[in-house]
Amino acid sequence: MKPLEKFLKKQTSQLAGRTRRQSVSRLLLPAFLREPPAEPGLEPPPEEEGGEPEVPGPGPLGGGGPLRSPSSYSSDELSPGEPLTSPPWAPLGAPERPEHLLNRVLERLAGGATRDNILLDDIVLTHSLFLPTEKFLQELHHFVWAGGMEGPEGLGRKQACLAMLLHFLDTYQGLLQEEEGAGRIIKDLYLLIMKDESLYQDLREDTLRLHQLVETVELKIPEESQAPSKQVKPLFRHFRRIDSCLQTRVAFRGSDEIFCRVYMPDHSYVTIRSRLSASVQDILGSVTEKLQYSEEPAGREDSLILVAVASSGEKVLLQPTEDCVFTTLGINSHLFACTRDSYEALMPLPEEIQVSPGDTEIHRVEPEDVANHLTAFHWELFRCVHELEFVDYVFHGERGRRETANLELLLQRCSEVTHWVATEVLLCEAPGKRAQLLKKFLKIAAICKQNQDLLSFYAVVMGLDNAAVSRLRLTWEKLPGKFKNLFRKFENLTDPCRNHKSYREVISKMKPPVIPFVPLILKDLTFLHEGSKTLVDGLVNIEKLHSVAEKVRTIRKYRSRPLCLDMEASPHHLQTKAYVRQFQVIDNQNLLFELSYKLEANSQ
Image 1 (cartoon, helix red, strand yellow):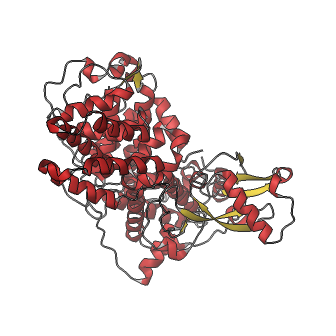
Image 2: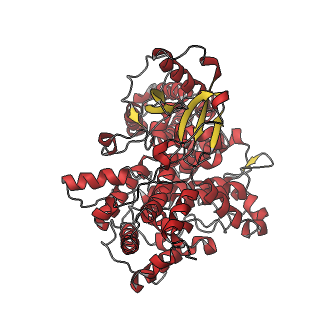
Image 3: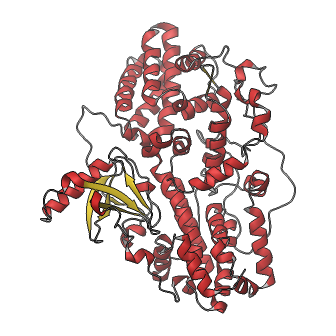
């Protein structure tokens, strides 16, 4: 199950039957079937008066200013309770089927129309909803080749194709490493466009940029020699190494090789080297090879199965054809290889269920240091998530898992921080220290909010709202009044009522860089997906494509400026950094309740 899937399902179901039911005909009506908008541009919403709740901590980071292409297409927060957004560009004409829509856009560009970056961006970001990437590139190639390349018309076709291809390469970049067929077509397109390019002076600037992009993007072309193998990466959470956790996070791709431990029923393990996108069958093959090398009893190869075991003891049998299983494991879940006879006897690892109450690192660090390291780490993780992973996660489900590894890890981290807060509070046995710990977490949440790290802010508040923590009445009574009021303000900000109105008002006033509460973005995209059809009577719903692209442009806006935090470089700084990036947490809710009742048996 994907991280925070329950949250998304619950939040989406709460919205069912609302405005989308009242305006289904408008939701499904493509923009070009209605009158064009009076103004070609989108007007920004007026600034609302009033500020967000005042909290202690450093001032907000970053500032305003125009954003550069292709990130210059700003967007307001879409509310799932509203109809889909009409595209600002002029209507394309009659409705089109998926296989004809791209040609219609290219014909408009080739006809001398002013290049519309919003139109290009909408098509590039959302084409996978109606046209696979390889088919999309084939249509580009066919458009140039079929119309001829001579005279003004040939120049127009090359110019249109070049504009679309430049935008495509600029948007996809590293994701093209996973597309073998796409690499071959892009190479052919490049050669076709660059042919006789000296005759077209008007295209010189664009062809030079195309040459630079093709050199920058690592294309995967099967018939050519394989690229040198990359450095093997320890997978976040499931292979702990101090030196790795201190390094800056880089994006994962399906072809990346990682280290991972696969356990046996007796809790011994083998360490395998595998592709992130490896199938269950591939993983079992690597495990079998290791076991045979270790002179384990023969004859186990045919009977081994792969099982994901959670700290609660819950077991999930993985099918041989499943792939990309590493990033879908829970916080304290592990892979076990065993025979079918020993499946029922599998038990969680002892270190995941043993509890050692007492003073931990959280008692020795300053709230500001923890908050700043949380923000810095989550910014690294957020930057690693390609904007198209949000689209693949929602619209392609299991088929898009290979392209959503970084998003999966970010969601897992959010869940991990939530359980970290509950774990630290419930492992503190002294009531006075527990109350001090609540104060510290509220300070951490306040500083994260001022850092504009709403992901960490949300996760910490959700951890304090955990039922096993919130029931500790005697502990909460020891909290000073101003901290109780502060917590109430935080609860109001995270309140999902009126479609998270308080949160949306606060984030709309923030300038980049911003780390949003990512599950809410996925909820909005899920509503767009379930609230309207991509194809209406076989015709592309342009309005839906534009609304999805607007949400993706919002993510671009959040990341359009670099994060700058002033953190001291010292041994203590590195110790805090390692602590924040390698939380030890209890994710078993039953165990958290057991700890809670031991601390305060009669609290209500």
